[in-house]
Length: 90
Image 1 (tube, helix red, strand yellow):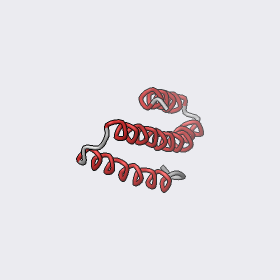
Image 2 (image 1 turned 90 degrees about the vertical axis):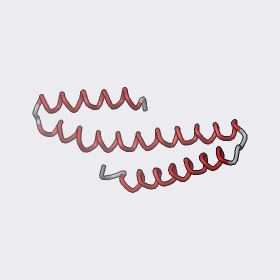
Image 3 (image 1 turned 60 degrees about the vertical axis):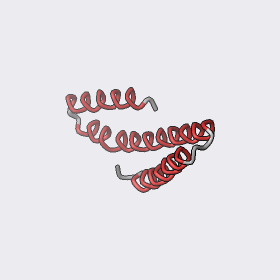
């Protein structure tokens, strides 16, 4: 994680605040629909963080495997990327 490190950290800090806000809403027995709206916002923001991390992974780790010229390393990174995309569903 090089290029997007600060963006990722900023988004995670914002997410942390949102999650704390949701916990406060629950403790204050706020309206369920309002709480669910906030959880949806957190889920969406977390997807954005995943996209940034995947982007950095592709730009650096996968690119390094491509540049290496080693077919085994290239195949391993390709399979790793596919697994990550399936897992994160971004």
